[in-house]
Length: 228
Picture (cartoon, rainbow, N blue to C red):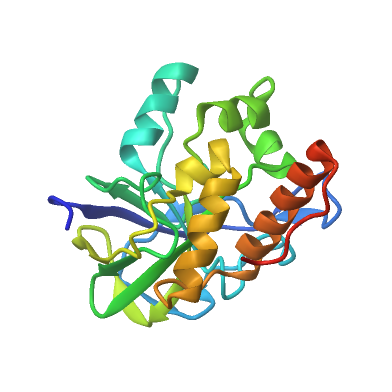
């Protein structure tokens, strides 16, 4: 469904580094692997996440970021954005990561199938990693968050592997549109798609939708609606 898309790099943690956050260390220091790596439900072989509450797990097993979006930031910041700097596991080229629909599936390498689950929410650890003024706000305002992925089928991947979009739910809600402008229409579309069996929303998305509906209800003075 896409043109020629490929995996430029597969990145896993180089080492845990000290961090001022509650955990005390961070696994954000990802570096490109030099050999093929097996991917199982919890992510890349040899990779870890220090803050398991907000990163990793079955619903955020991998984090993908596009080379084209990294190139935008390189121009904005006047510095290189090498693969892994943003803490991503997958650096892609030719793939519209932020335009991917929630629930879209990709096939990569030898048997791996992944599903787009939700956008990345930038955190204080990311701010410290980048050491750029107001980094979290700037990253949020630009609206190029990258996508978290869950593993549908385990497989082995390496730099240079093709990436193919194999299915889309068709609800039209993308990673970027939800990240930058989540609204009731998009929430309705996601929930309708789930009821129709076209997508299985992860708990993070259900929580995000619920919070949105509470905000809308608070603003209007009406009680928040249940799933429609």
